[in-house]
Image 1 (tube, rainbow, N blue to C red):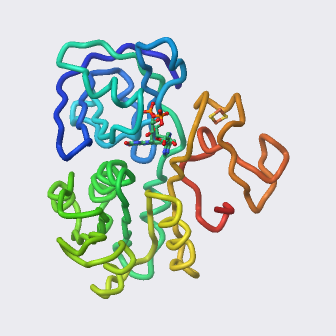
Image 2: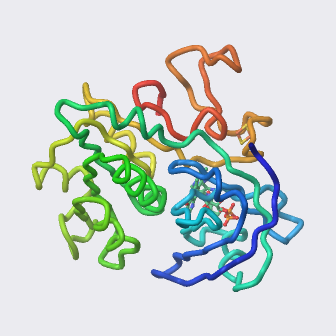
Image 3: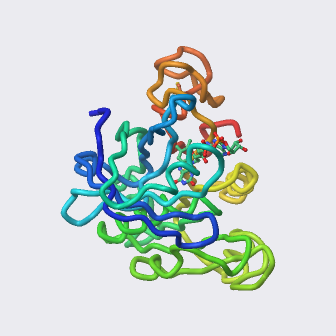
Length: 263
Ligand SMILES: Cc1cc2nc3c(=O)[nH]c(=O)nc-3n(C[C@H](O)[C@H](O)[C@H](O)COP(=O)(O)OP(=O)(O)OC[C@H]3O[C@@H](n4cnc5c(N)ncnc54)[C@H](O)[C@@H]3O)c2cc1C
Ligand code: FES
């Protein structure tokens, strides 16, 4: 169920230049899963629409969520000033998220081998996904891509997966992008889950070939609840809601099977 709620900040820290790790106590944690997101409202009335931020983690007691975000503009800059005890308005939980049961069943041998590819600020949602897949008995391989060796969250992936890294400048791991690291390390897999910039997702769609790839589209959004059509993506099949060849990223996604969307 979607609800507008008030959460309470438990903690916030800066974990890399311009990247913040925010923990919020909220009832939304009870229903939050990998690939879903929340809308975070600013206090500044000139920026009325909530900012979509992915679920990076859910606490074991399901009482709080973790959001990891990059300061991109006015809204996220305001969030970076939140402190322990502050109240923050949230809309959620939004989006479809990853289907763990489906991912567990795509396999050529048991257990299923799911390759997680994260680029830049597409990395946070991959951490909760690694956790949920690992708990479901899936073999998880994570390849995370950064600009340079100022990484974030990387160590945490090792608890749930075989973990590889690619950096654009070659200062850590494979020099290049996440697909360069997959090739360099001869990584084998049954299916891919990915989140990151659009050029990366396009390359992954081509790379996946016959194998299934599930991509999370983190495009610009407005209402976040399916009302404004400000987030549509072209689809191969006629959408059951719009009756045309498009889907709303905020409600039909943000996770789509790559072969089903034109990106
Ligand atoms: C489903 C979803 C999940 C997301 N999850 C995360 C997350 O976990 N962590 C995170 O750091 N960011 C995430 N984003 C992106 C985040 O929502 C934007 O960075 C944020 O809304 C920017 O708000 P702002 O007011 O700070 O910046 P604005 O002033 O609105 O914009 C500043 C700059 O950021 C760019 N921008 C704005 N929105 C987006 C967007 N959606 N994608 C890419 N660039 C954008 C603008 O073009 C502009 O250059 C997600 C987006 C979506 C749609
Ligand atoms: S953002 Fe309004 S319909 Fe998706």
